[in-house]
Length: 269
Image 1 (cartoon, rainbow, N blue to C red):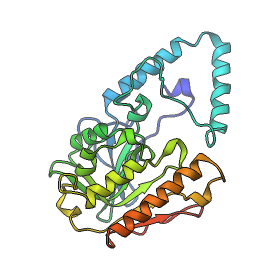
Image 2: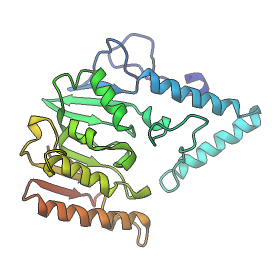
Image 3: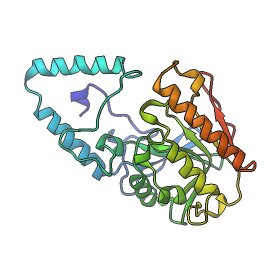
Image 4: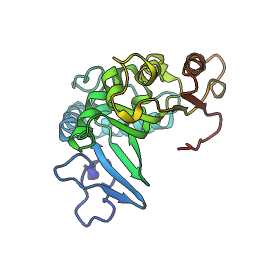
């Protein structure tokens, strides 16, 4: 609740209704923000119910104001150390993972962003089945497999969040990889899977007609040179760069790739 967290619930732009959780709802309308239109494609009430159950388990295990005080201090410490330490949510308060993906991750807020005839799918840390369910519920798969301009690859391109079926049903001109090499992400197997969905055998190819014979680009938020020497992240990205170089050469000009070595990068779409 906003009172417990001391964080107000956001008011939807242009809405006079009482603020409420962002989720897929019956007859949920898209949200206009300037010239952009945002459609919520996840989570549903099912994922949020699981999240609430785990959170309630967590609160029941916390006894007394002193422990709450310690908890808040620990949260502050973890937030300050997030860039290097992160949170471990794999064993999450009595709620089983969904096919290897934690409930906090499948409860990610996801949007389809539309502007000037272009579409960007923001997937958060969600899992492929949950994403497809959201796209079905919001009508984006009514016409069949979906081809969009930009796909932000879910959960930094972790192997638990992708499968060949997802890559066949959702394709893009631009694939954005936000992992920095931590925990082995982006995974080499996911990069290969996406490549195969565009230039692999017919059994692996993306099903949307727009994806056929169309060039595509991989965007990586960082590079091996941007990582600390002798770090696991630098080692991961060295392997990523090696694989991507081979795939680019093999693609006969169909695939291009950008590795960012600046504080930010501008996508040219």
